[in-house]
Figure 1 (tube, each protein chain N blue to C red):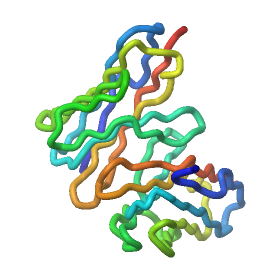
Figure 2: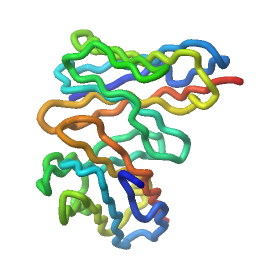
Figure 3: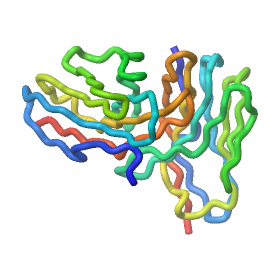
Figure 4: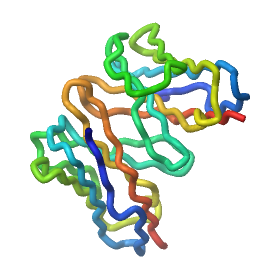
Length: 112
Length: 111
């Protein structure tokens, strides 16, 4: 059974800093891994998708890496902005049924 | 244009009632999902359908029954609602194992 842990649970950083969010998962036999953000009272927005054969994906100021063998992924946010404040969720997907297992998330606050 | 839409956005009902939540996607995706986010914000899959066929059916009470009339719709019907069913329910869709796109959620409150 896949278990996903995200550390830290909460993080506050001043605006402009670069930061890294961590995700670890117990079953390395994954099909892909997605990073989402969730704003309070809102749905999930997909940020990045990494296929199991890839090592990283980039979108603007975001860079996600994947080390499948060690069961780890990181989300790097460059030059953080107050608008980046949200909860970030990591979700590895399993083979065959595309089932996503979510971590408990990291609540990020960017201080202006 | 809303890619994945859900109705209603809020649903308040009493214990014992039966209610439905509707989901529609206009992305042309072949797979749709229902997720539940509990009061601790933990998000867990309930069901998934691929081309109207049930693929994932997690350990969910029989009171929950998904129905997919076509590829673009996946509805969730809940019988005999209980207090513990209070949560936010999210619908999502994807195509070919690629990114999953989520709806805005339906906040269900059972009193």
